[in-house]
Image (tube, rainbow, N blue to C red):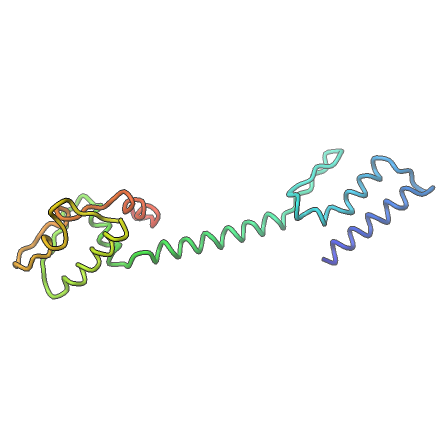
Length: 166
């Protein structure tokens, strides 16, 4: 702020001297006035071009905008990375791979069932008609191919791309 005031005062003093008998008011006088007010215009302008090829860019405004955007990008990264749990992310990865995805019903199947249900509610996976958790996790001791009961949606594929894992 002190620098803005100093530049303005010096510019105004030179402009006043320019209009007295010591100096004649012409293009240079106008340039001095513009320079006097440039610090105050930085909030409205991002760059100024003066006669004679002089260019002034208001870097502070650009840097502030970059910092704001960096902060917003960090927020989005945080939200994307925390959108699903690590287990849910692994399910999405395995559903999107070309490898078979076999599961066997055991004591931890209810956790897997909850993860599938949450991913389906989020729209990241879906199930064909007459298929789903009940048919996949039927407790008969058999291993089943998850991909026959669930598939990854376009939204799920997009999510993996955002995470950089597609």
